[in-house]
Length: 240
Image (cartoon, rainbow, N blue to C red):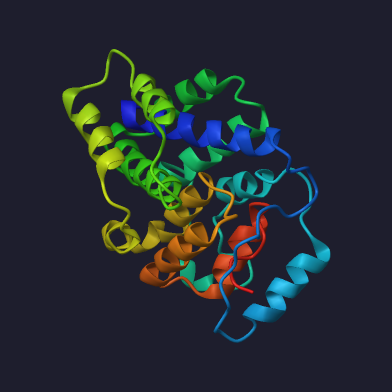
């Protein structure tokens, strides 16, 4: 597995650990302080049901289970979102979620196992999208602070190539542009890239909600599919 894949999984796992160790408890939907008015049939009812029944279990468990199976095709409203593969971006998201569930423990072992099962070109291509999505989402409510930038850069390690270093620096400096991210994301990976974005934030500010709304619309994801994904990841529905 290449450098970018390790950075992407490590960053996603770290954000997941932060989420689990924060004030958000298990068994409830978190976030949701910022939502977008829904405009599609069924969206409002879906959001009300989500608030009524809440979440279940670890907020990151569901995404790991779904990605390890057949993707998001079985969730309500996800038919148009595409099928997640068992390797590539789906595999990296599943590894990151599992690492977060375990408090970041044994991350190195997980990376080693993935290295043996994934071809480097595919893994690095998916990692680039995943890392870009998380950084864009994290910057939606303001620039990433110096400490977090340094942490990401340090994660590259001494074996990072000049190309990897340049890629990360370019993403950290890039303007927030969800439409460009959506345009560069293959149809089959749009749901996964959106999920990667969610792993970086808790959607508790208007700017974050608006960013995700722009990303979802640019990717052509139905509001019901987006809400289902938010609830599967322990978050309040985006569309109310």
